[in-house]
Amino acid sequence: MAPSLEIRSIEGACSCGAVTWRFLGEPEDATACNCTRCRRLSPLWAYDFEQERIFVDGATSVFAPGESLGFHFCPTCGCLAYWRAVSPGADGRRRIAVNLRLADPAVVGRLKVERFDGLQSRTRLPYDGRTVSDYGA
Image (cartoon, rainbow, N blue to C red; front, side, top):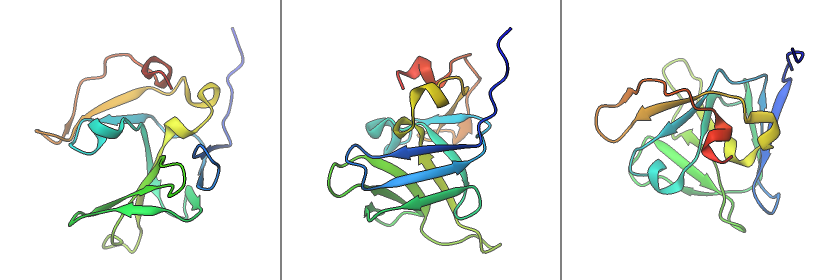
């Protein structure tokens, strides 16, 4: 049996390297959402709070028309790097999620993928056994 690998952090970068992120530790899972934004962009999200376990760097273009979330893209290569809550929550913390498709597939490939129905029911769907590598990442 292969030894268990402990991930200390996961790093991701857009295609040109101008926008980067770091997730401290290992996320519990990745999320595939089918909301109107995510089904068009195909990200696999890992969630936490900004400046706690997720750190981002680099100038971005933001798409957030009347939304509670801003989707952050690299203005040079167009990669979707992360979303961030437009405003902090009641506790002063700002929710953020990074796009795991920008990380090394060898590092994130074994993470299970939870499916979220963001289009209709806004609930988690039953786990179907797939991992990030099954999604081609």
